[in-house]
Image (cartoon, rainbow, N blue to C red; front, side, top):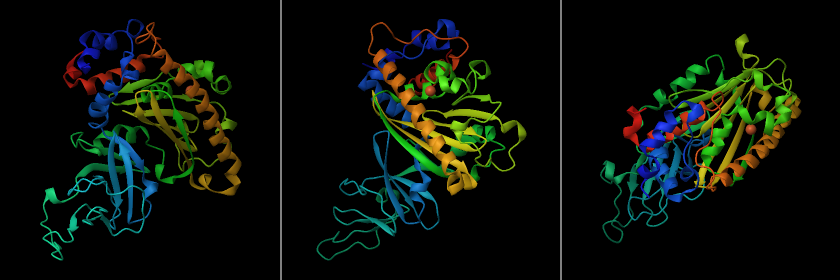
Length: 388
Ligand SMILES: [Fe+2]
């Protein structure tokens, strides 16, 4: 089935209708393997997408393989400290260059015929290239003889790539988020823990749920006692950024009492919790004392991996005195996410039902769900961007 048969004009109208009359994406977007492939091509290859954590390449001389949108990539950190991304494939016979992360590398050597490349991707040498003992030690320096580079940029601990190279400057892509985070000194953050989950649900359900406060009273009633539904802001959206948040009266022990706050944090941020999604799948929440990154990685139409990385301010990330507070936050996320996964897997099940194909939405909480659906639609049917 061609994607335009799922993403037709009637759907575009529903995604742009008043929310009480609209819907989200049809079931195919969550269960169909062909839709999944199209989404890789049109959403994940054409956008800036998260690739890896920069702390995995802390040392100069690290080479590190990652998978992004079904593509095997190779990340390197050369002596200039810049992290670069390449397709993880030798230009000669197409062997995958790196299968596992390595440190202290001065170059990359293909195991097939020992062609070697610098960490900047330049072809260095080809043993026996012109015959026995006839080595090519000074290959012509041209684009076609080097590794195929992928647009790559790093923002704090997060490495992003743009596979098709057409998404524009990363600085422009991230600018709206940087602006919203003014007042938070992200340089003061350090990784304090991480969690990994395998889920039997489409990655979009995880993002939709992340940005949706509506389910909290029902799925996480213990959180509802901390901030009531009436105190939660409805989600908002602007282009490729989704957000929501609340102002809390007292700190929540499950989010780590006593942890150090961001230095020089403006007063109006000292009792705020804010959630952001950078389309398509980089999500995080920020509190006065922590930032938690949530990334659902698509594996298959109905299968995803989730990574949750918890960053704390200054000593909060490693000092013994904050050990219990940190553990409380990690446990909170673990328990919370298991509750969410239960719901995500139910919603995935629901997407197999003939009795559902996009939903009946709350006009107060769910406009963001339509917007997220529009972002998917617009990415996959680019000519729709002027519609609605
Ligand atoms: Fe939740």
